[in-house]
Length: 193
Image (cartoon, rainbow, N blue to C red; front, side):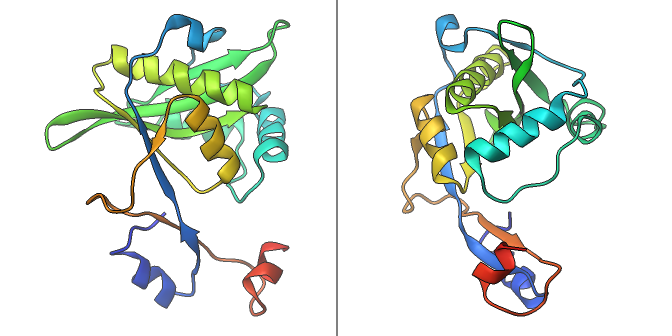
């Protein structure tokens, strides 16, 4: 996800620009009812692989292959990460969603970031995003930000109270870049690989 300043370097190295990403923001204060069934989470079970498959089927798009080992390394054991996590489960206790966020200061103001998430449906993603916003607020965040490139993810986050920031605001504009194993052909052909 390079910004506009670093994008030219990626392009020179053979990466393909898949387009700009949307920056979404919301206030962090959420009612308990909006995040019903969402709980704090730390260690992630092996069921993450099935959840990742459901997420891809529901939202599509490009993404990393996420396993429980990767998620735990990235968000639970990562030194200095201090990530907050929430999980959603159905009535049987099956994992239906997982989200990770962090608070970083921007010009001295604590901002919460929705860093990554997996959800089995749009409704679960709405609850997860709300639950994570609530958790970030409890940890002193004054706003919550997310960057997305998928229209389906943007719709879900808008339903969770996120608003798209205008392109005229003086904020970094992120892009999605990728490299593919197949060399040559059109972007559409490479995306089918």
